[in-house]
Image (cartoon, rainbow, N blue to C red; front, side, top):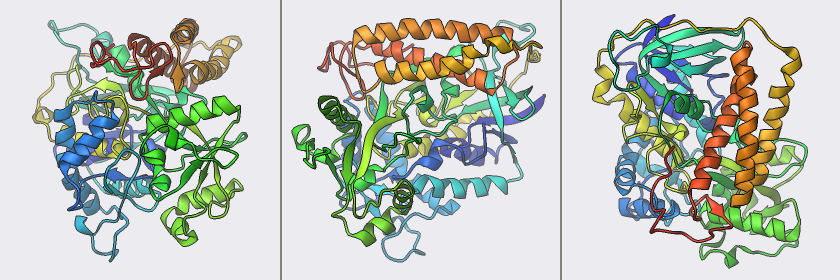
Length: 532
């Protein structure tokens, strides 16, 4: 058993900010599945939205966020996060994050930040570091954590289950509320599972893009936080709203990668394979429409033409500007045989971001005592039915900082006697096919039947198939020794079921959830959260 004041599961922006701020109050353990930089934050290209331009206003940012979210977001939450954005942005700058500056690169004032505009924004308000903003933020945060004597880092460690009433030998007294005392953590190099006991636990595990076969997420994004919280008894909110990024690089042989929305913000144009434009038919903002609208437009045009991809054309943007503003995208596309300065980029929508998640307050508190959540794994009410571009890093930053400064962080906790992990000594090699094959089948079902456009008939079919697959996986999990692949596949199945159940509960189309049977919004019946 390892004992800490604070346990952080996940090493993205939310987890590291929480760890840094909590370290002044106690000892912190950061547990991460691979290396520290293997997270969705590191993949983030665009930037962080914040009002720092005098021509902009908090009201504008709030309105853009609310409208992009299908008017389902919580206005009071949006307002608070938007108002705290400039201070938190300065916090990252002070930690050493090297955002792109307008004039003097050494002038680290907010007023000197270079700003860009992305889809759904009415003003330029996105602070960025070229096209590798997330990587730059992670570099600064990781360096700060590594030199902090009050933070211990455990790489190649996977959280298996949260420790709650289910895992104690006997209750000393009646516990009226589900309570978390840490987690069972697996060392993936040795397969040993230990108890990490903590007064407070922060879930900052990111999203679940690996539920879909075509996604922009790193391999670690298997929805572990969603699954653990759901099994422990947390409230899951709005899991039907899976945002597909409109522009992922299309490659029939290799993993897709994100082509930032900022490329369209600088003037790139979406085109059909014959060169014709089409976004003017779908939205007045054309190529800068909110992501859900752009993704559905591309999906519709692909289905209509039978093509496998469309084009993002940036060839009219000055070559020097493309190479200096988007160096990562330029080099990455060039490595796949496309020079973006002289030829259009083949693109296709791909699963990108979960707008729903574990229900939390604006301070990151969940329904489970002693358990916080922040970042993509959480649902604060900021995003509503569809995330506004570059609001994700903002939410992770603000909520994690607020959570670390919440008064409950200093509460004393009485620990019960926690049972050791009950490991099975058997492993049925003949049944391993249940794990290896079913993961691929899950991806195929979700991509085909629970994607950008849905129908209730296909959702019901998907629910039946995924339910059976989950039973097979869970049976294997219960009767065999577990490893990383088993745990991840079980988690993917759980998240898939949560998405499908939520999608069936919402009989309307709103934001990232579009169902053919109910193509219109229904503000009378469904202007509310979907809760499981």
